Amino acid sequence: MKTLVTGSSGFIAGYLIEELLAHGHEVVGLDNLSKYGPVSRGFDSNPRYRAVEGDAKDPALIGELLEGCDHFVAGAAIIGGISLFHELAYDLLAENERITAAAFDAAIKAHRAGTLRKITVVSSSMVFENAATFPTPEGEQERCPPPSSTYGFQKLATEYFAKGARQQYGLPYTIVRPFNCVGVGERRAKYDREVRSGNVRLALSHVVPDLVQKVLKGQDPLRILGDGRQVRHYTYGGDLARGIRLAVESPAATDEDFNLSTERSTTVLELAGTIWRMIRGDDPLRIEHDPPYPHDVQRRVPSVEKARRVLGFEATTPLEEALAEIIPWVRDQIAAGGI
Image (cartoon, rainbow, N blue to C red; front, side):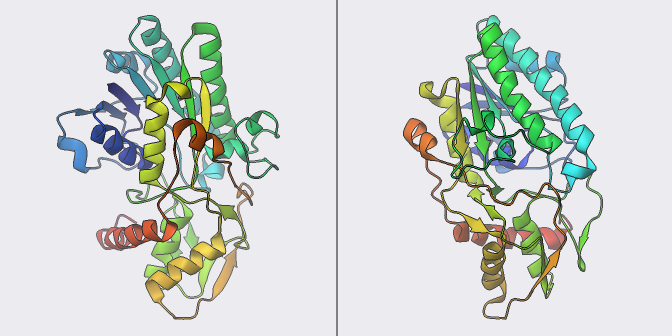
């Protein structure tokens, strides 16, 4: 099985490509290196992996790379921390729309040529930005109000690209929605501007590496965004990669959408307390609150029943186990100047 993965230098893609290679896939990875610059990973020398530097908005290039591919995981996108929902509000919509259109133009052509079997679209939990039903099941994105952020709105549009391409051109699809990926591999993006939380410059990625680096750098009191009661499902990247692979491979996943997530709900305050104890032990934790961003969703709780029933997928890595891997990685990145 041969699979093209766009956005191959990204955070989730690092876990996904390793997972695909471990299960016998031949993988072609496409990335323009605009987020982190050149990155090296353990699978770079794998004979079944080919890395290509190029533009995911180029349908001709994508078409060339799809030659001989059975599957296409469309993961390329401009993405970052919540501050980018405001800083890049237009680009997150316009650039990601161009990336999406190029991906589907090439995929439709490859499918009509008789080679590509399916496109798997990496969407986002942000399609449920304004959901009020919890746990939130697949299909709720069509019933709840549309996302308020341009990023969430464009991710929802990506799902409609998949449905439209299936309806008009017969292109089979699967939609996957990762929830709050945590793991190693996130660095400061090249296009991030400086944002500070107290005395610490944020990494502008996700809450986990930012909280870890603040504790490691000695911030006390520890500053968090908002009141800390925001609910998230922090899901280990290796688990998400397994879920995406199962969605790629399973015939039962054709023309279906899946929430990929741990079942465990964690507030930001609980997360901060866990990270603090793992680094500072019994030292008393004091919290100060920074003003929240408008698009900081207060509750994000997915239903995972469909992924379990159809794919046999469960996210099994406890948050504490993921943090035991993340904390030393962030420590090393601080020393190297990557965060």
